[in-house]
Length: 281
Image 1 (cartoon, rainbow, N blue to C red):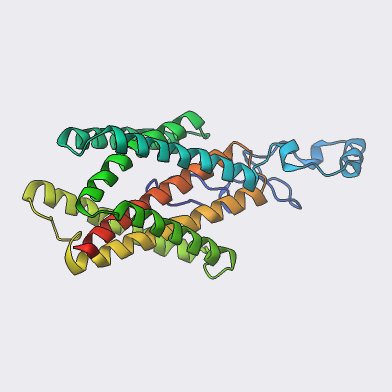
Image 2 (image 1 turned 135 degrees about the vertical axis):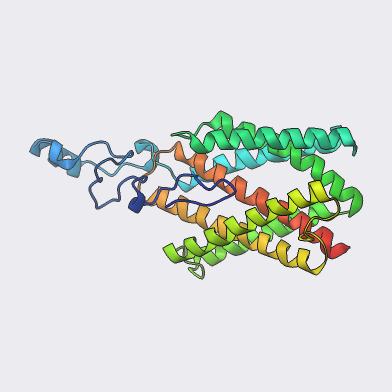
């Protein structure tokens, strides 16, 4: 599965795309990066010993577990929170602080992009992304709070609600991540990002609010679509994690899962901030 997020090329764990490990009752396909040999390569005695041995736990085999994902995600989100709090209390609302926020966002984008195209997860890059993203969010959140008191808290609560709602919908199979679901969602996401980019260009060179996508009734609609896309990204993250655990992804892949969840939650939080600011105007 190709997962989707603001970074569209993030790797997935699904069996049908050549990325994932092997299932419990299936032989690893050729070229499988998680495979460590085929049963045909073992002698009869080795096979007998293997089947008689007690089952190994995920920790013993070095495979990814849900605990690994939770721990890594807590580390990345904790780093984002620390960076945001430091920026919030250390930087005043000013033009220079906004410049620091933009610079931090660019550094976070570069680190995230490097991680996206690397063959394996690099914890240093992911934590670095989280730290700089946190600084950006801290400055931006403080600016929103100056204009709309309490907006960041409302956005955090909204983000938590979207996460919980999508997790329940995914676990109860109200939302099923099928190929059609992914294609439609990806098409909408690409269109949304392109439209947002055009809006920014009009705002930068034409002044005002660009195409008006972030103000008034149209802004509310665009904001809701943005939040729904964030929920869509989360569903793909959940599918990615489920596939990784099911097919025996290496433990280090939990960093990739944490990276994806962090990207999705940051996306939702920013869209929530914009939506709240429009509604309160």
